[in-house]
Length: 174
Image (cartoon, rainbow, N blue to C red; front, side, top):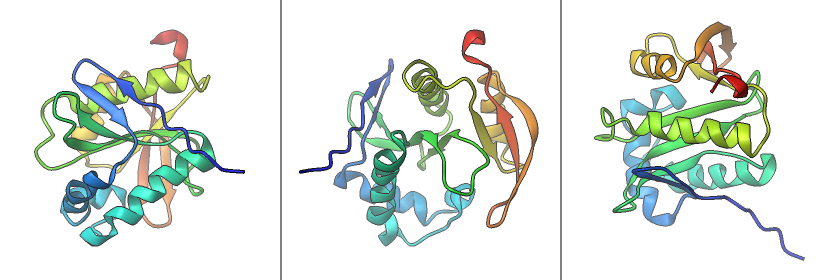
């Protein structure tokens, strides 16, 4: 008997949301060791990239959903991660996003977040979802606003500290 992990691939106009691949490790490692990873608990060692990618795959196995690598549709270059996410310490499932160096300012996170939200509402049949954002992360706050999200309280995480809960619009509103 075998255990199979099914990670669907989503496509948008410019992006492919796909499972992590070994070839993503260098770009992911550069992100992990940079200050950009502070929003996900970093910085970490670049050598942690492979193990953290296996955690992403494991999330799909244990929860039935998870984050995808955001890849350029034309080149397959990894641009970041996005998708539904629910660590044990979270108050409820969220749509998370992180972009690698050089990927900001192109609308990739917004495109990936919209596709992720469509997936959680249409495929997973959720009726609500949040995004957790560390106060002061203005780029993510502006993105949440563009996604139609609104602040819905605070969550105080033991490791990350206070985070704003941004509630996504209900499925019937999008």
